[in-house]
Structure formats: C-alpha cells, structure tokens
Length: 168
Ligand SMILES: Cc1cc2nc3c(=O)[nH]c(=O)nc-3n(C[C@H](O)[C@H](O)[C@H](O)COP(=O)(O)O)c2cc1C
Image (cartoon, rainbow, N blue to C red; front, top):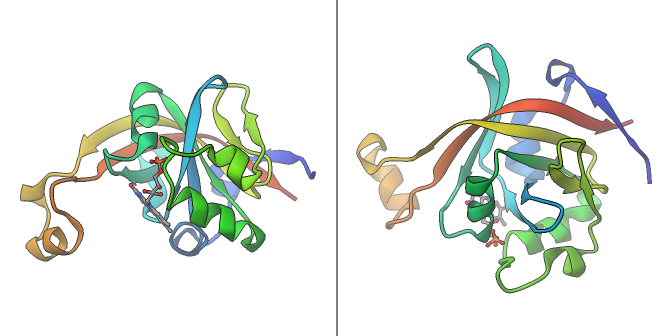
C-alpha cells in the first residue's frame, strides 16, 4: 500500500466542496484500544484564529459522538471512489451494533499522536478540537429546523488541522 507524505494544510489542492460534500469522509475518534468511525458529508475547512481548521457537525445520537466528546483529537479520512461502499456502510450502520473495521475491511492506522485513521485513505486530516458547541434552535432559520431537526441538534466542532497526510 502506498505510504503517506505529510503536507501543510495550505498545500491541499482538493476542492473542499467536492471533498466533503461529494466524496464524503470518515470521522474516526478514540484510541488504539477503542475507536469508532462514521461517514460525514457536512463540514468545511478554512481559517479561524489564524489557524487552519476543520468544521465538523455530529449528531449526539451517533456512537462516534461519545468518542469525539471524550478525546481531544479525531481524524477525517478521504478515499477514492473504490471505497464508496465502505463509506455507505459506515454511514448507515452504528458501531454499537457492528464491527465496521471487520465489515468494511478497512485497515486502522494510528498517528504519532495516537489518532486513528485508515491506511486506505488518500488524504487524512488530523484534527484537534478547539471549540465545540451544540447548534441552538434559536439561532437557526425556521425552515432549516423544520427540514433537518426534531430534537437532536448537531454539535459543531471547530478543530485545528494538526497535520495533513497525503498519498502521492
Ligand atoms: C453520506 C452520509 C453523510 C453523513 N453525514 C453526517 C454528518 O455530517 N453528521 C452526522 O452526524 N451524521 C452523518 N451521517 C450519518 C452517520 O454517518 C450515521 O448515522 C452512522 O451510522 C453513525 O455511526 P455510529 O453510530 O457508529 O457513530 C452521514 C451519513 C451518510 C451516509
């Protein structure tokens, strides 16, 4: 399997709208002993407090949520199209009920900081939480509330992008 090289966030050439919205990502959090992963397609990347950051939105009922809450760090792994089925699986099953690593055949890897990600990814963002807040009904336009929420507002994480791992 090709190995990763490390690049600066500013050296990323992917279109973030396509990367997150169309390619999707696996958000993976936890430790080598115990971690979980789930698919996300909402989020972003940019600059806040003069730092390169990722924006991630996770609903509290996700099993992954407990892991993003407990730890300081998580990863966002991006894949080629050949792994679409694995992302569909991780976005439709819960780690409470299934072993996603076993069922998808993806290979977990761990960064020097101990952050879990996947060997098969083509691009990985290693993220450290800087800010986390539940989205508040009072701050969201009514039509968005009606369309997207009953009682389970996403939690927004703004995370510093510690390092970017990329395959050639
Ligand atoms: C394409 C796609 C995108 C998704 N994006 C998000 C997202 O941005 N935030 C979120 O909370 N759930 C999102 N989900 C839903 C979770 O991935 C899904 O509920 C998953 O089964 C949760 O797994 P877990 O319980 O093991 O954490 C998405 C699902 C799919 C298929």
